[in-house]
Length: 186
Figure 1 (tube, rainbow, N blue to C red):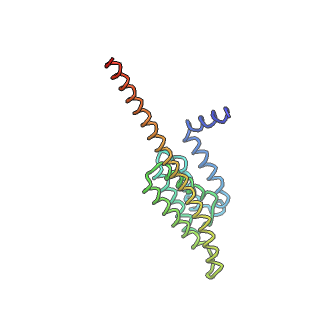
Figure 2: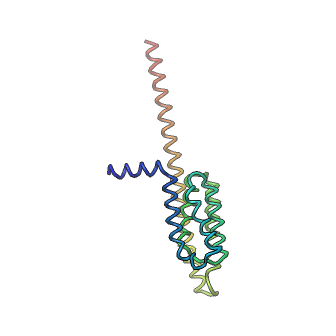
Figure 3: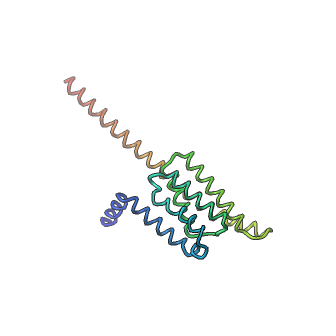
């Protein structure tokens, strides 16, 4: 348990390095599908994953850039790329670090992008197509919704702990003031 806490503390002190490694891994997962197509697919994939490296510093900008990269890949009909996970990571970050109205907008963009990607990528028309679309939305939309809920609850929990710490400090100051008043009254 001691080694893990040391590792977690180190990881918390180096968030840019951790996020940079995550961006690199996401880029590697998307690379095999992109190499065959090269230009401009590679540019859009990089636009999708590179923002992960600075996601904590600027969550809104990182999400916006990744959404633009994802939209480019959708319009090029790239299909699902392993690097698409970056948008889920960035949606979580948006929900964890920004006000709810901003993260809900990010959730809406993600769900809309998922729906467009499924419609563009699903061939034909018919009952089977509707089943494929419904299943795809459950998987993609459900993943996006889960990331948003986790991030939103993290933001809420962080705010709750800060409020508790503030209240404890205020109560301690009040207790000290009461003790000083009591000593002065004696």
